[in-house]
Length: 247
Length: 247
DNA sequence: TCAGAAATAATGTATATACATAGAGTGGTG
DNA sequence: CACCACTCTATGTATATACATTATTTCTGA
Image (cartoon, rainbow over all chains, first blue to last red; front, side, top):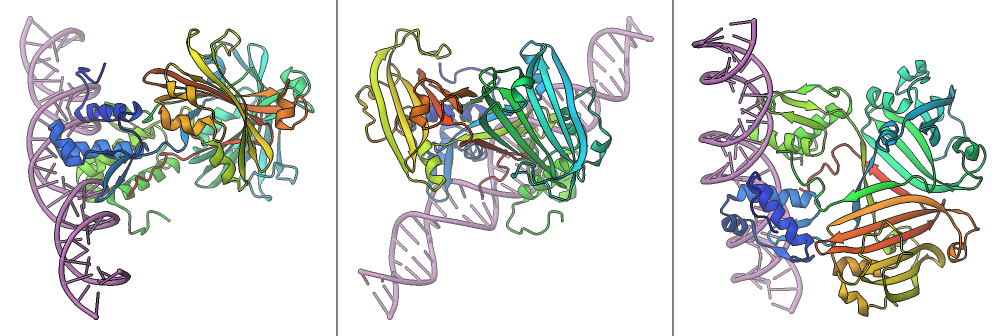
């Protein structure tokens, strides 16, 4: 059951696995001081560099904390972190085994206005492309996309009609972003939403708002509205992230 | 504008920053082959090991892909991944600057039943501790917690009354988990919910369902229900994760 | 011409070594 | 007894070196 012979593991992968296992199993509880690098090196009969590599990775993944002169300690799990993968909507629909289609509702170039969401930090003076569209999964509305694209950062978008393909994927290629922020919350369907999503008035909807920035400034602000109970975001977590380096 | 003199950076941090910047700025677009390790080493006047360390980190963070004999390439951004941090509820409330309090609504030991949520993989025969409680932020209901604790994995919980402190933090210490899954969706407030959360009937609520496992099996299943528009989950993302190693 | 063998070039891993750095302890001195 | 300088130790970084691994390219021979 333990490490044993998965013979094609590198030394530091084996050691990493061993230590991870000891930590997550509770054998080494939070606060426990792990053996010094030199001791680990001796007991595994490897060089300190190899052990150091392992410890560095453990520290980067937050499983341990290191203090000079004192040693390395199992860190207390403070926040539970999960990797949230927000994939391309088309891919998301297709992975559900349903045919994807898409329709554009409106598209216009305009300046920013007060009526725009307050927490959008595209400057007032900027011109934006304002696109609204619906994504369908097998004929059923899957998600409403309301997007503002900052034309001063992505001028190429001015010419985009997005008649046949949604702006998301195109934008990703055009203006790679360096930072993103997601805000996830729930709202009641009001106004035109119930009709567009084909759900009862006031039904709960899941909203994902994403803002992205590149080196040049704010790129886009998108609000995705999903019918509430029919859609869920799933995030998985295992201790040291994708703890396997590529080999 | 470039690297500049943040003098207290280590060599590989400087190089890492340089390359990250070139990638996210689009100067090196997806598919671009970056210089070979030996060349980078020469141009930065460092050893190949140092460059290798950088490249390994870039690969681990998904920014580049490496192929032997061919070189290293900027990878195309496929899915947008974000680190989702779900913190302890008490910490969450306090970080909003509001006083935290807590009340238990019910607590009982029982066997699993059909009526339990279907996607809960605690075996039918297991005994569980079924706890329901409310978390308050300054007197206002902040979140309803409905939790099942698998007593065959955490027998110590049988004695727990959780009169004074919520089960979440206790459980985290008691039974460190190795895997977790979150499911996030929206529901309308029905049944006893509106009263408990002090919100209108049918108001949209955000639900976070979390299942955790340890080496011994399923540990707990918890469902957190937040008043919809008052609460949001925020996830941030920057290219190479917390790209700073601890120094 | 084409298949297969051998050379080649890149990354991947591991080692020994060196020195830097920062905390914890220690001892001296007012 | 308090405070300071000093030392000692575990981690942090960097290097040169070696060899393994694996695609690609090139060469060879039927």
